[in-house]
Length: 222
Image 1 (cartoon, rainbow, N blue to C red):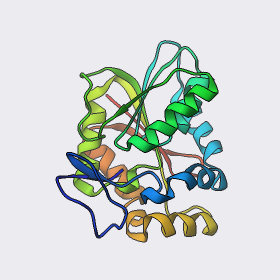
Image 2: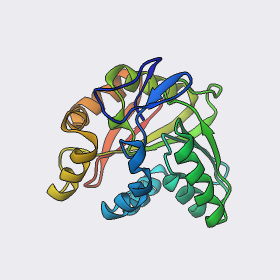
Image 3: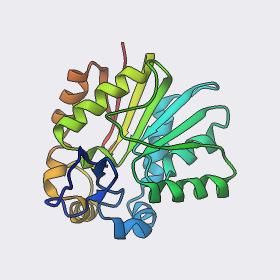
Image 4: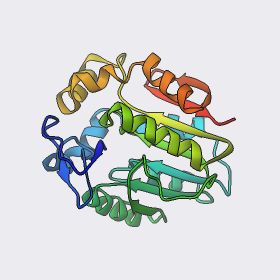
């Protein structure tokens, strides 16, 4: 979900026009969207989502914002495991959101899906207990990453936490090949542990840590 004001990202090859902004779709290219969920299954993303959800330590009454929710897999999974938690999914891609809404309906869960951008959240301060994001950070250039993290910190309540899942540089060779094929090697270099940890710390997060063997990172507010 990379986005910039009033321009297309021709050098990325997968930009989609929007009335106000452009963004990179969930699968990197709009025509690949039907293959996005099967690819995630191939990469074992469901198990990684379970690790992220467990690390979030959700409790009844919590409000969760899933930034860059794409086709809604993580948001629907959270709601299914924790029916007493309110979940909001945010993504700029209306096609992905349509899939997400159908997915929630099939699962019999209620998730509020909204169209929007991670660096311009239309929520008030301290509205959420947890913010999650899965396979989205690599789409963002550096200024947009910084803007998104500042916005996430703003909407999190004191003691809340952000939980990120994304491609890193230490996963299996087959997964690394597939992720680079779709998203580009430069994006993966920007996802190295030191760079992401520094961004989280600079944004004001505390207790930044990596969990398990996947590129799953947690960061808490003060």
